Length: 290
Length: 274
Image (cartoon, rainbow over all chains, first blue to last red; front, side, top):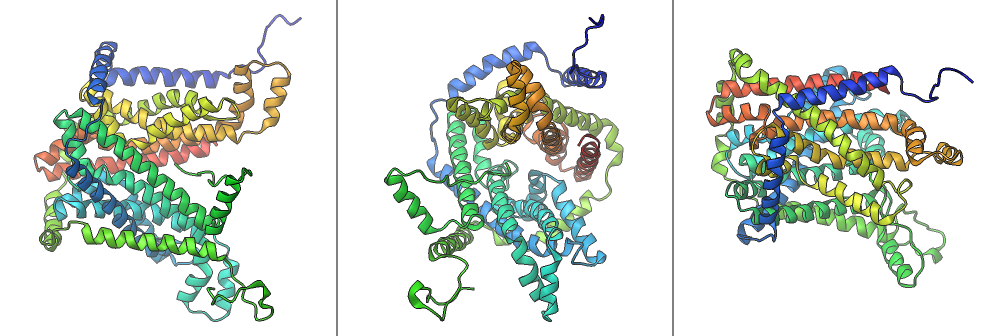
């Protein structure tokens, strides 16, 4: 009937324009970065040889591999502990609903500063300050942990209900007791969440700080790359992925225990139910974060 | 809270209330023990050279002294172009990763793709993308394409697939069935269901994921140059290798400025879009 055919849900011209802009930008940026099909084609050939040399993976120096892995794990554990210990007071100081402005601003500034630089860059500075080795990695990752946990801890303290704090205060409790019995129980569950997430993230990063000489498996990986020992590289990468996945499982288990009150009896119960062919509730909770 | 174990149900009156059952307490205690054991073991076996620690304050002071008069004059010739390259790497990498991640995310969502096998396969892709660090992706792509921004962009893109795909897939799984069923009942094609049923529902989540990932990518792309994948990290690497600490501080200041600007941009964009 109508002469003009209109699609009912057609894109608006703004949407079309922005899609076009993104496309044009992508072409422009690709040109700026010197991309070309020819490079891409020659790269595909290299990829085939690379994969050919990576498989089968071969562990050339098992000792180096295990030492590096152990050091990475130590870095992750100690950096998480140090970071959490430092982040708790700083995060508490940064909460604006409990602390005066003169205390919260410096704390927030410290947290923002810790967050702004990538852990690997921080590791470079610490390598200069405390020399090559695991200590630099621990300090660098601790700084990153302070940035992350401090920020989230501050935010979750700012979201607590002040009624319970007032109730504790009304009993005449000291400031420390107010924090201990009024504030911390309210943020404990979320704190477990950040802490496990941060441990996971430190585990990933502890395998990388070695690239700049801050200890861990990263140095071994980098030198294997530089010596073109791609089969060793593949072996290291597979081990790393396995460890990271184990870390993720552990983090999930810790969250199930502390947040969903998983008990030993519940696990046994599930085993029995499964053995008897009864359906069981899935153990895992949905992961909210990466 | 933890009272002596007089919790037999038959015990009658002097009754003790406990928040957690014995099994729960046991499991918690085991985890605490595990944490302590891990810390002790790590402290015992970690190799720290005390001599390095003693002169750390001195070294730090030396570092700051060498860094201090920041070599601003070097910015136009050595840093500006690299900084732009970093931004291009981050942005192009994000665009590329969204293009690659959305299909995988759609396949990973079990309400959209009913096949279990395909779901698991898509999840495997997402997990392996996330498990490999962006620096390792960069090393791999450097081995393939040679050093330069191409390797960096692909590293950023591949590292981001897991993040974007996972969050997009979760957003789709949380979408309401109503609009989708209504569309299906009209006989709409799969594409139309996707575009008119799911997309309006996941749009806010999608944009916030993309913005968040862009912000992370700006930070990460600043580091990629350390292994030779282009961007400002190359300038940093050169300055570090030549011990030109005043230029190092210039690069660090530039990275810091870009990170702050990126954070401001995403806060503004989030207000505008969401």
